[in-house]
Length: 150
Image 1 (cartoon, rainbow, N blue to C red):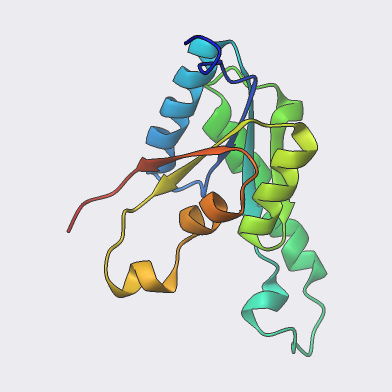
Image 2: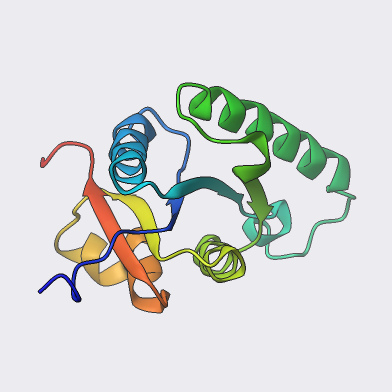
């Protein structure tokens, strides 16, 4: 029976840095601590050009750099109470699901932890980040329910 139960070795916690991320972070840190796993934390920023369809008449690279620096500072603050090495904090730029999958593979993670609002109806049909992460991952995914049920 123990052959089927194994501890995780490397966990990737994907956060959006909202207030709800604390709950998700606590769960991931507890799992990492209980299993002796290393913990990495990723926050993904979508490029500004995605929001504007890539058709922007100005250079957004300075603004994008500022967003990345701000995200790095917020991520460091978020992870300050967890035992996560600064080298394990990742701010990535790109499509959220793609970057989470890419970094999970690159780091050899065997568990990805994400928050989920548990949406229903049209919101579920339209998809969510946690759902996309779940269906594209090559490792286990834990979706931690956050937010209200209303």
